[in-house]
View 1 (cartoon, rainbow over the protein chains, first blue to last red):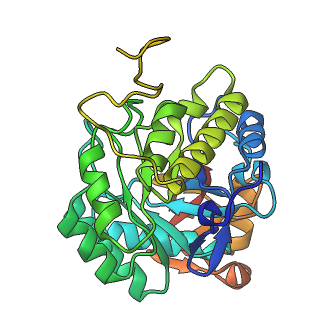
View 2: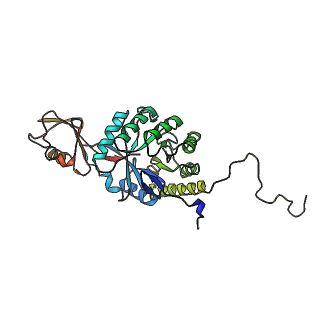
View 3: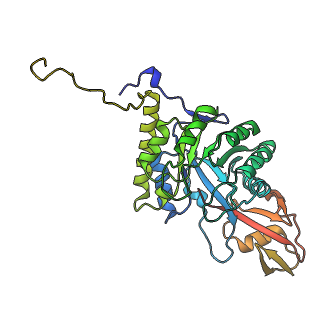
Length: 264
Length: 66
């Protein structure tokens, strides 16, 4: 189909890099690293997240980077950080690997709900931006915090849809919408997206992109679900660009309202 | 001599340098990041970095994560 000019998409641009895919994939929890690679390829994801951990001295683990195709941008998360200082340390270690300076800030001290600590996340964003990182803060969707993150120089804002790994979808929908409407940065919905329909919903709302991990990694057929997500993200994006009409509380007939054969 | 490597006490040969230790404990030294006594040591300096008794060494690399 020819797409008319008004709905022609511009690529997602972050820190001067452009991306045609608006589907970000997390690399945790995959049963096999081949499933991960197949999922990146089937979805066309161009940004993937990884974490940093102490090397296990007892058993040899395969290097995950070998399963990430060339040209895919690495976004290293600071998982394990409980405060801003720890996030900075993880980011500095990650940069030494030579895999770039894109960091997803994840500061979490609660192990039951894994909710991000917004206050420490703002502090971490300030520290990392000053140190030259491109910063993607993962946050609980709060307008004031989002403004502080933008002021601190965040490259994007990543509000959670719902609890990490919960597959509950957009429980925080109304608050994410406020960020989309008010913050002049790409809003990437992260965490809790369990189904392609939920990813499409986020994109219809005007999210710049979505990040999915658990749903894909724990599906029986990850590469197929990754592709389904990527199609849903495209569909949602095109729907957003098409400027859908608002919801109504009363009916509006789609067929002519005259009687079938006789005027009534 | 003894060092603390990733939180565990490890016996290593005297006069080891950082490069030796990383090669001894990591099968794939590619993308390993080293922090010695809280300071990052860049890869190009591994060879010249001597290790002394009681040093604390952290070796990290990338794993799957969301």
